[in-house]
Amino acid sequence: MALKDEKQRLAWALTGSGHFLKESLEIIDRLPDVDLFLSKAAAEILQQYGYKHNVGRVFQDKTASAVPVELFYHGVYHTVVIAPTSSNTVAKMVCGISDNLVTNIFAQAGKCRVPTIVFACDTEPELESEAPRENVVKVYPRRIDLENMQKLKAFEETTVVADMVELEAAIQARLACLKTSSS
Image (cartoon, rainbow, N blue to C red; front, top):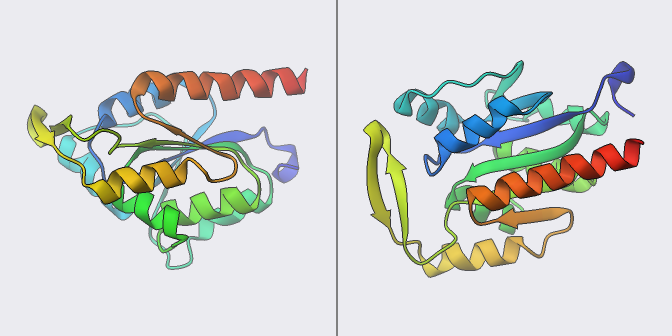
């Protein structure tokens, strides 16, 4: 049950990746009822890239115990989206490490059975990624990065997507599922 009959919301977490960050923010801007969770690296990256977001509530990684995760215990969120997700964050999630706001959200969502959609940045052996100041660079994810993405696919209540089309489709499918279950 959500706090005080509050309408359930979507929790969107950003990590320190610039890979499809602008496109992720564009999706966020089109969705209703989104709270944004920023890792320390995400806060830096948003500033470095000069991107803005248009959401009501923003939580930043400023406490050692990731205080905002308590909202999951009260049913405030129906879905978590972590996009874009850096290889560092994917590795931590796969290993069960919850040492920052985003990895804590992933862990608590799993413990509270809140479905999570993850857009892992390192999905192919060779990618083009946006760097600051609109530079596009070639990146070559390591074998361990690709293996971790595959491991994450086996987690309960977790959908891993490889591109923006899949991300948009997974979010729309989840919202449609919620709409059907509330009817």
